[in-house]
Length: 131
Image (cartoon, rainbow, N blue to C red):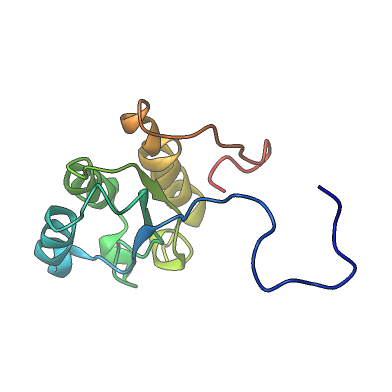
């Protein structure tokens, strides 16, 4: 179709609605909340879940890979695909941010592939697979 000369308030082509669940900030003290949130997801009305990071507290004592493993074990129960982005407390506040970020990447880059039969084709930055 030809674009109109004035903007319209409604799309001019057919479209589908995208609906998703977002969560953030799930240190160990909030694991039960995350479990309940995952259990309450309606897979018929939501397309995916995005976890926007901060799985660790802003303390160096929490900078262990097992934190990511624990959160992954909870999120794997999601009935819809889960995409994960790192938060600053997941790596930047650790004594060794490089190692912390490597731990995060080994746990969550490509995590959505656990739902491979449900995810659309996605494109990632070649140089930043975590994006």
